[in-house]
Image (tube, rainbow, N blue to C red; front, side, top):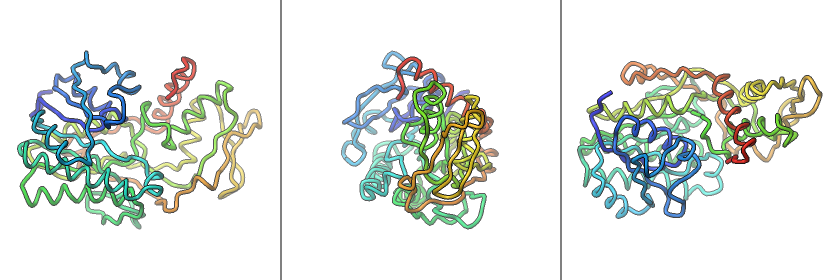
Amino acid sequence: MKRRYSRALITGVGGQDGAWLAAQLLREGIFVTGTHRPSSPAGNWRLDELGISAHSGLDLRPLDLRDASACRTIVAEVAPQAIFHLAGQSRVADSFRDPLGSVQANGVGALNLLEAMRRDAPDAHFVLASSAEIFGNPGTAPQNEKTPTVATSPYGLSKLLAHSSMNSWRASFGLAASSAILFNHESELRDSAFVTRKITRAVARISLGLEQELALGNLDARRDFGYAPEYMSALANMADRESGDDYVLATGHAASVREFANSAFASAGITLQWSGDGKHESAIDASTGKQRVVVDSSLFRPVDAALLVGNSAKARKRLGFKPRVELDELTRRMVEADIERERKGTSN
């Protein structure tokens, strides 16, 4: 398809979302500049797995988003027509350990980049990776663009600051600034610190005889699990629109962490049999009787929403968003990728 933009800036290009988005835009012939933390190497395993390198046309640059001057410099030099802000502190659990660091990385970082666009690339379209965590622990479901935002975790607060900035800069300065309110979106490229990848990696290792069991926290938290590449396609379409807006990206179906684990183990031919409840719940392999899942109370979060599930009707209508990969297919892809990595000795 022919896009309105031919030059894009992607912050956090080495993350799950950034890598998938860069791969898509490069295939379409878009010139992509991707940023990484100055303390991190330019390349990484996700870009390698997708076959992305300097030879692919990707322009890689270091950027500290907390540095307003550095943000202005890169925007002025690149002159992007689309800015996809995907970088930041991405783990809810980490935000409880360093709340101010999360606000700096996610909230202030977004403001620095947004202000750089206002001054040096005012005709670009800014697309923010927002989060369903801005809804806190909502009392109604599904959540949509009009659901009240009441962040309850430091991570949610940091994302809410960035999300609110999009609305403010749209109204105050007439910028094309959009928020993609992303519900859980997973893939083969998910970081192993996330519970979904922790599960699929453990399943791979258990199936290969390299581990015996998996420790998890809250099994009852229900989340809306989608497939990351489909969500990144929606972000690419978002930047094609003339004006900015907010869009929920979600499948509309919720599953518990327990159900995600069931699906992942089933992908490796293991049926789980559960017993106990709460912090004393566990699961065995139904065919062998070996214990495979235990609950570790230290893994529970101080604050954890019971149910986050989204209504993406607006994105489906305006962006052509069509999530097709369902839970069993999602876990199968992730488990198979992890099994392949373990066999090759390249697990990340």
